[in-house]
Amino acid sequence: MPRKAKVTEPKVTEPEVTEANAVEAAPVEAKPARGEKTKAIKAALKAHKDKLPKEIAELLTASGMPTTAGQVSNVKSILAAKKKAKAAPAPAVEEAAGPVVPKDAVSVAVLVKAKRLVQELGGVANAKQALNALAQLLD
Image (cartoon, rainbow, N blue to C red; front, side, top):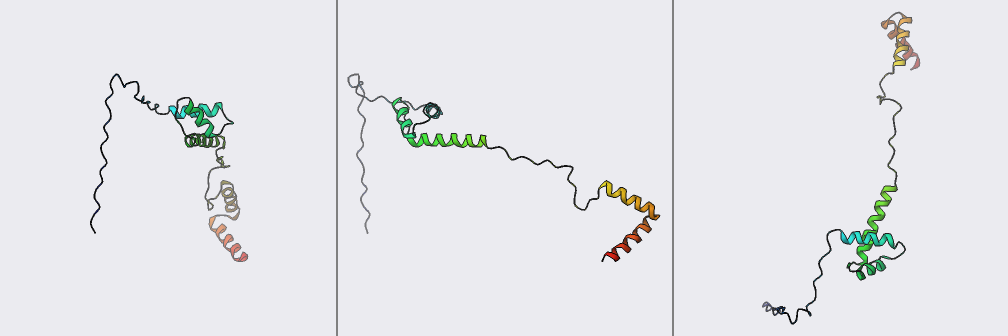
């Protein structure tokens, strides 16, 4: 199957601007500086809290800042998210009552009691025998 012929569009040349038709040439608007549109939207949202994004966009466009309702909604939602994050309290970190001790660790109080038992039974060997006998009775 043969290829379609390539269609080329005719080149349009811009008319030269002379002093006679300079008044008729449309003025080129400069883009607002970075962040200016957002600042204007934030100020309008603050001033007109009860208005819809479409109405705020119309106000800003009429004042010379071309915006859309989508841009206003975007800025509005970002402000709401920041406000919500700021209002939410940070989760509290629980403070431990004491230092973290493994489950198999023995406290000082238990060691003091064991020392007294060893002294009462006459030595470590006697205390071990007594504990073994107790273990056999409990099983």
